[in-house]
Picture (tube, helix red, strand yellow):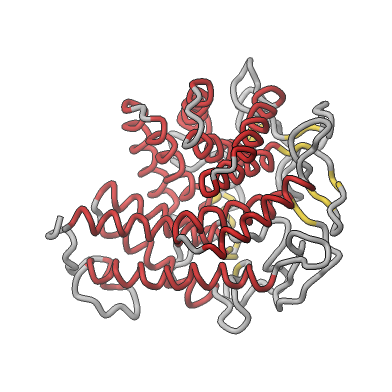
Length: 425
C-alpha cells in the first residue's frame, strides 16, 4: 500500500497549487482543509440561522446573507439540519453541535410531524403552523434519515420510535406491491394526488431515481440502530431496483423518472446524482452484508463514477445536467454535485487504486475552494454560472439549501482518509 501512496507522474500532479511529494502528504492536507471547512460550515449555521423569535431555524437567507423572517420553513431543510448536527456531534464530540441537534429535533417533532395522518408536512409557516400538508415521500425519507441519526448520537428512544413509525407509513402507503418501488407523493390523508412533483423542475411521474436513492439512504441509516429483517429486505429490494431499472446498462447513467411500471420517462443526465449514487448504493449493500450483492454493486458503482466523470469540466467542476436529446449542457455548476463528487470519486479510488479518481475528488474540492465558498460572507454559494459568477438569485438557506451535502462530504472524506492512512501504516 505504501508504494501505491507515492505520487508519480499521474493526474494528481496536474492539479494547480499542489506542493506535495507523496499521496500520503496530499491526503493529510486534504483532511486538514476539510476539518477546517466542516467547522466553518457548522459555525455559520449556528450563528446565522437560529430563529430566536419563533423557534427552530429561519426559512430563508439569501445570497447576500439577508434574512427573511416570514419565510416558510421546509421539512427537508429542517430534517437535514437535524441530520447534519447529529452526525457532526457523533463525528467530533463537540457538545455545541448536540445542542443544535436537540433544538432541531424538538422543533421538527413539534411542528413537522403530522399527528393525525402520520408522516410529515412538506412546509410550515414561519410560526410553525402547517402550510403545505402533502405527503412527499422524499421528505419522509429525510425524516427517517435524520431521526435515526439523532437517536444514534443522543440515545433518545423517542427519535428511534418516530423514525420507525415514519418508515412504516412509507411502507404502508407508498410501496407498490405489483411493480416494486415507491410512489412519489400523496395528499395529506394519503389519498392519491394529481401533483407528484418534488419541485417545479421535475416531471409529474409516479416514480423517480431521486426519491428511491434517498429512501435507500434513509433505510440504510435506520438499519444501523434497528436490525429489523423486513427493513433489511426492503434495502436489498431497493438496491436491486437500481440494478434492474434505474442504472442504464448501456450509458451507465441513471434514468431520472419512470411510470409505475418502470418505463423510462426521461433522458436527462444528472452528473451529481450519478456520482452520489456511486457511493450510496455501495454503502447500503455493505450495511446489510449481502456479499453477492456487494460484488454486483461495486461494478455498478465504478460504472456510475466513470459515467459521472464525463461531466467534469477543464476547471475540475462538475456540470449540473446534460440533455442528450438536445445535445445541450445545463451550463451551471451547482454546489451539491461538487460535494458529492468529492466522495463518489474518492470511493472509486479506494475500489480501484486508480489515481485519476483521487485526482477528480481533490479537483472537486479545489473547485469548491476557488469558486463555491463565499469567502466574504460564509457558507457555500448555491452554484456558479459558466463564467464562474455566483448564482446570486439563489439562496444560502431555503427549502433545498441546507448543511447536508457539504457537511457530509467533509465528514465522509475525512473518515475515508483516516481509514486509508491506518491501512497504509
